[in-house]
Length: 438
Picture 1 (tube, helix red, strand yellow):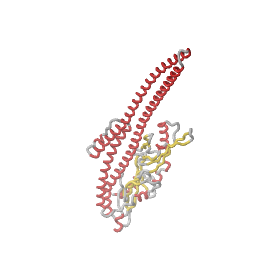
Picture 2 (cartoon, helix red, strand yellow; picture 1 turned 120 degrees about the vertical axis):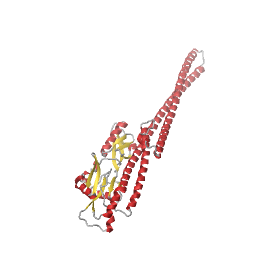
Picture 3 (cartoon, helix red, strand yellow; picture 1 turned 30 degrees about the horizontal axis):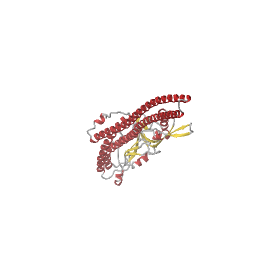
Picture 4 (tube, rainbow, N blue to C red; picture 1 turned 120 degrees about the horizontal axis):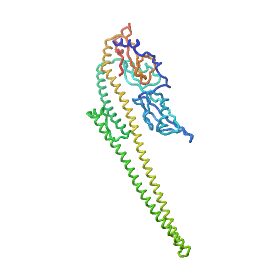
């Protein structure tokens, strides 16, 4: 039955465009989930005649499962299906709008790590493997340990692998639920929300101890972080109120000083007139002049004190703004890390489910076939590749190139008239079927 399926696939039921023609060139590579880019942003400042690097935007960033990049200062950027040139242009234009630059800065985007490929079917170690440029189908099979060779006591090993895979799936589910709870908290903090509520999909799992613990911990952390921020802001606002009261007192003092200066000047004018008539002595006039000068100096000190107090108010306003910006930056970084972990967990879960299916269904049948059949098999390769219209299957050859994110399914078909293989080599051939990818 399996060899008939393989023949049907090769006969034309699959999309049979040669793989080499489907592969895009390096300059047309379009990003997808799990790709990692290296970003640098520079701005030419003509007034200073120098290039300024936006270090806050420089670094390596991962494309999440939704095909998005989360970047400092500008937030979310759609990256899935775009080339590095298109993303660089979008980042420059977004920065120009967000930061208020007169000219669009130059963004440099390059792929630092491609998304992995997946090898399933008749290979020794199915799973995800790092992609490298010019990787061929045969090289991908080599990364997966070569063609499958059923070992002795394979049934017992498969049973152990199935138990281990089920345990891994349970652990992944618990870890994923905790990350989902954390993401809800971080998204609320990004919106500066006040009440933390969880969706029904999470609340329905509260009976699970680990999920209930995660909900309690994230709720307590949300309240603690919010209370700490509000306390800092409240302390700064109270300091501003005290400074404002001090300014009002100093202004009232200036009014009093103005009245005293007015009276002192009147008295000085009267004494000066009496001195001119010879009815008063000069030392009295000199003493009054010194008094007026001292009053004016004291008034200037009061004005200076008011100016310094107003500077303190401005400094507190800047501190409040810095606290809010720092909180947003921290939350954004934590959210980006959480999204990345969730994407990796989802990929691990899918891979573990595939391994579990292989251990419980496909591999046992292949072991039985390997013991009973004596015909040779010719390898059959099928690549599942994402396209704008969805996933498509492509029949390939050993020398055809792979692309990042490809799923390589390795099968085999019977060769009619092939001589039977010897018992010594019987364990080195594994009959199989086309491995399905959900």
